[in-house]
Image (cartoon, rainbow, N blue to C red; front, side):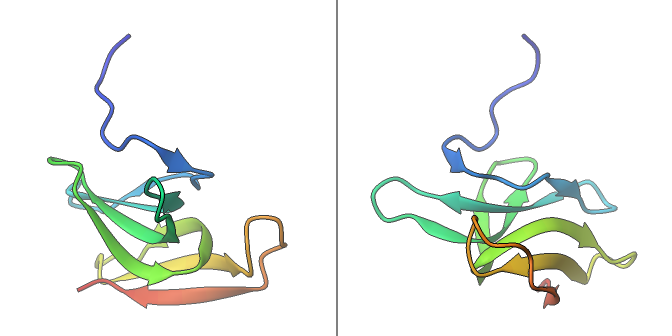
Length: 91
């Protein structure tokens, strides 16, 4: 087994995507134990620290070429079909 577990305990995660500079990973997932939060998350690739960008259900996040925006499919919940594309600015 190679590598290390960066973020444990993700529930129903989307496919992760890397920022162009390799520092951040964007992922849609539910995170947390008892008090779970579903949303679009940034993961610091060096530390594994999570930062919530937006609450809700997101799939297939994609970074803009300048890494300032993430586009993702949104849905009402995990069991619903995606109903739109959202743009989320990264601060």
